Amino acid sequence: LLELIATEFAAGKQTDNGGLKKEAWPGVVKKLNEKLGTNLTGNQCRNQKNTLRRLFIDFKFLRDQSRFGWDEECKTVTADEKVWEELIESHPRREFAKLKDKPFPLYDLALSVFDGTVW
Image (cartoon, rainbow, N blue to C red; front, side, top):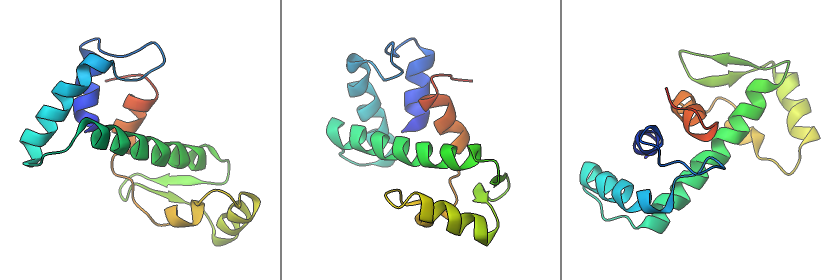
């Protein structure tokens, strides 16, 4: 999905606020369904994109924290146990505990899509 969105962005189908233009969605949905052999709707694809965006925002937040690192090989956020505990405690409404040791192999692609740049 993110690859298809990035391709559409590269073709100039990005809105001013970084979203995908409305007229590009049917093509993305069609290509995704052909690639996966599914019958997803536009709403399902947009919901999945929004889920990936929220996940990206949380991973980016963690990566931007001074006491956190990034394991490029595993695509996981790294930090000492105490640092994780402090962060989780200081942000009770966020679900950062679920991201501990969770890989996000799409991070670089998500960065290009959700930060509004395509390589």
